[in-house]
Length: 174
Image 1 (spheres, one colour):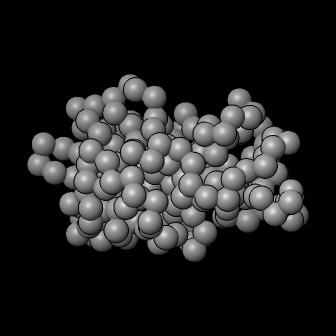
Image 2: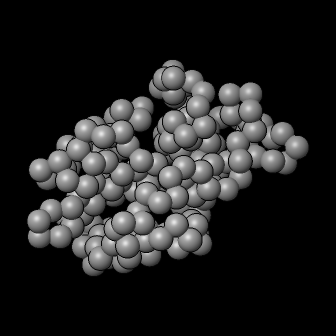
């Protein structure tokens, strides 16, 4: 089960909304979803959380490239939405949407994931690291340091939004 939420920074603080990922197949789709929530091209943070497995943060600032962090690349690579993020972070297939036909977008996939020497998931012929990948400073200037981000567990969204000063706002959509 996934939970996804958008936090858009405004002049008055943060606006929160839950979001549906049904039509998302690529990183561009995720970025467009975030940009659509932007107020005056200000900061938008998209959170994706898969229950007890991993979380991801995608940050958009206007038309800049997205900044991405994933808490556990190996767990995320087994997930349809996580695969979109890990593909961007670890390289690989330029269009992960080509592989989405084999995935169920409820967080489960057909078959068992491949393992290589217990290091992590097999991804594009390489081993996916079990652990965090991406921009560890993605939220540092917003109040959550790299070390605090790395210390979070899979149920991180409440702690992240509290650090950003948007905890109560997010609870209204959760």
